[in-house]
Length: 357
Image (cartoon, rainbow, N blue to C red; front, top):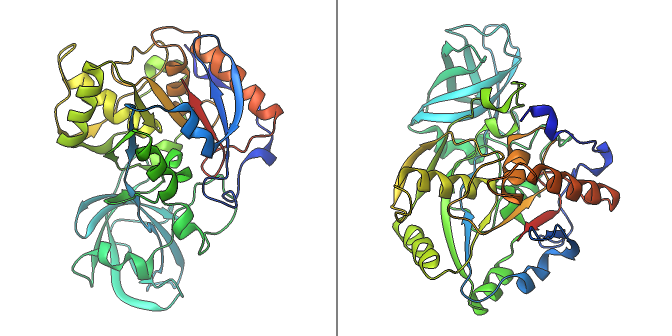
């Protein structure tokens, strides 16, 4: 299949710039894979589509306050730093803007959220072919401990505004724990503590995985043919408790429901490491799995996700799940997206949700 096969027309006005008034106030489009039927609903109604014995798996990665600002002492020029991946406590891959004139050895003095100077300095050590810079920080034992005072929530590039105080909570799931993402696992943003408690009370098991979302989630697919695309790597962890819960559910023919494409990537990556039909085992590592039609899923039975960008790897994953092992999932998914556009659903990170059963 070609990248262009996953294109669709999205009116710019449907790109959500702010979250819904209530965290669980989004709409929910439900796709039944058996007959392609669509049902319009609302997110709190998720309770009605899940049943006792279901295993709901969510990504609990916490978004870093990864957008930093600084000045070059030599020129006074302002620089924005976006943390991409931690290599060691004070060594990171970053994106710098403007970055064309940045050279190895360039020094940047960081500023606080209120633009006051600090004693923390970033020094560029390396610049790779993608334009990312490996930077070492001095003036602090561990940069992570300074991010509350220095950093801002890194909103996605399609949100055309600066981050505000509300984004500190709304661009973070209520169950976020280990910090490491530079973009939110957005399907989880809709859940409230009350909804999670209600699901548990109905007999739904809730478990977590961790996948730290990288900037590659926004990277366009440049290859014309999907077979030529190289997926970005992301760090993940599957705990023993979640692996055991999933294994038991599969053995007892109960549903495993993934919340978000990142959760899918963890579970299917772990399955790929095991021999066919072998149970999942706890694992911590990196994955570059690229899921697209006609991928054959081994673990998940239902998927809760947001609406994704045209020609994105996330849309390709959703299309694969709409008809596992076949190519027609693309048509099912794009038909559902066309209906969402007609009904003016909100798209992307702060947008509405889709449940595929």
